[in-house]
Image (cartoon, rainbow, N blue to C red; front, top):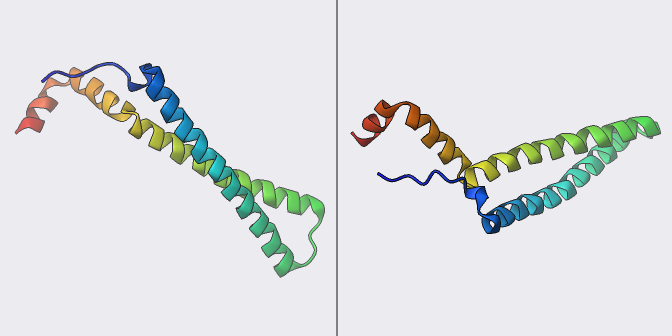
Length: 106
């Protein structure tokens, strides 16, 4: 069985496409994070009453950045999987363990 050991992101066209998709995902998720932050501050304002400005800012930043961090990490997982990096690492690990290939063909 012949394996292609090249990294898929070595192709500039595919790398541009993959990173463009990642950036597009992050732009949408930045909007979702801003919406979540606004909803959190509005909900607190409704339940607690007028908030001190520092509490409103801290709540907005905490909620917004948490949602954005989750989006970045999930986006990187999708980028890694979609570009073939996960498969390349798996092939690299199998080169060190030839018995793994024999087990998979059974």
